[in-house]
Amino acid sequence: MEEKAFEFLKSFLNIPSPSGFEQPAQKFFAEYVRDCVDKIEMDVHSNVIATKNTEGKPKLMLAAHCDEIGLMVNYVTEDGFIYFVPIGGVSPYRLEGMRVFIYGPKGRVPGVIARKPIGLRAENHQEKPARFQDLWIDIGARDKKDVLSVVNIGDPITIAAEFQQLRNNCITARGLDDRLGVFVLAETMRRLKNEKIEPAVFAVSTVQEEVGSRGVWGVAYRLKPDVAIVVEVEHASDHPDTEKQVMGEVFLGKGIGFNRGSNINHHLNTMLIETAEKENVPYHITAVPGPTPTDASVIHIIREGVPCSVLRIPLRYMHTPSEIVSLDDVESAIKLLAAFIRRLDVSRKFIMM
Image 1 (tube, rainbow, N blue to C red):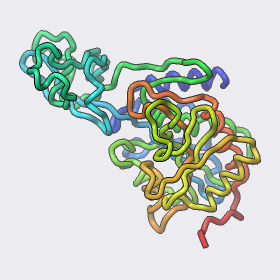
Image 2 (image 1 turned 120 degrees about the horizontal axis):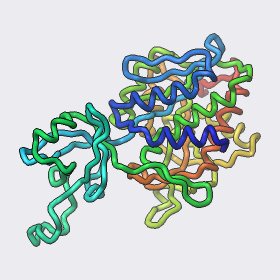
Image 3 (image 1 turned 180 degrees about the vertical axis):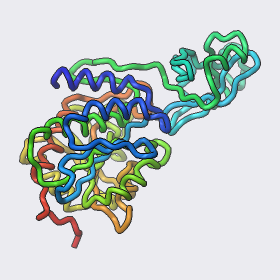
Image 4 (image 1 turned 180 degrees about the horizontal axis):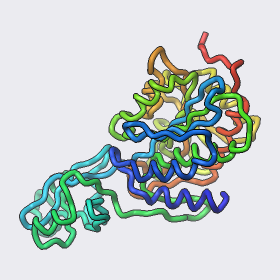
């Protein structure tokens, strides 16, 4: 990966972006791709649409969500301890002892998630998993007034875990689900910067996916795409205590994933797989019989319906502060998506008969 792209990825992953508070990440994405596209827009929900070849046909929507799971300030005690609620699919079980950042009106405030020490709990409660109401954040405040001088009710919170490079071209970060997908969109547009293409391409960094794919509804309705591809992550099954008979075979560093199921257009999937084979991009297929838990489940049924597919990057430890992916798979996704766009023209039909 070239240095400019790698430095963007590191910075992008370190920016806080909990659902509903995506604006800093969205501005960063918009500035990065501005010189690669014909137009940049941000809508009322903070979706960013980067458009290339506006009048081209067919209209291809690429989508990936920039929001991450997180926490939110909910209550402050008179003694200056902060209680919180989850944003998206956060498990309370693994939060005890985590360091956090609260994004208050005056800037970032560090703190620690705490719980009554195990030695002080009643004997029949010592091994019980934590609930959110059992946890609080300690910022070292003197009292409630001290807290409220730097923190407001409703401020977003992220775990204080930042980008790290691991062995064998792997990386770990908070929020790879799914700012990694947005990165793939950005790099795809950069690769096509000086190329003439047939389709109009709308690369959309969406918001609020982690709270029900709420951001993509309006932008997909307005764009009226002829075809759509969502770039997402998927659970890897190459680590201990996984069941391949349930999850399928999904390995880091061995290629991108395609879903098969009711949410997926078969003709579009076939074209993507043919492109992968032509470009020597490794891939695997997983079964998803119902709607995918992605923005594709929304785009798929907008207006009279949109042919959709999902391009997936294997990821370990989803919805933790230390998700892991292989940059080899990221490169495969970018290569495939750029090659697919070069091949796409109005002769392609996606009606399933």
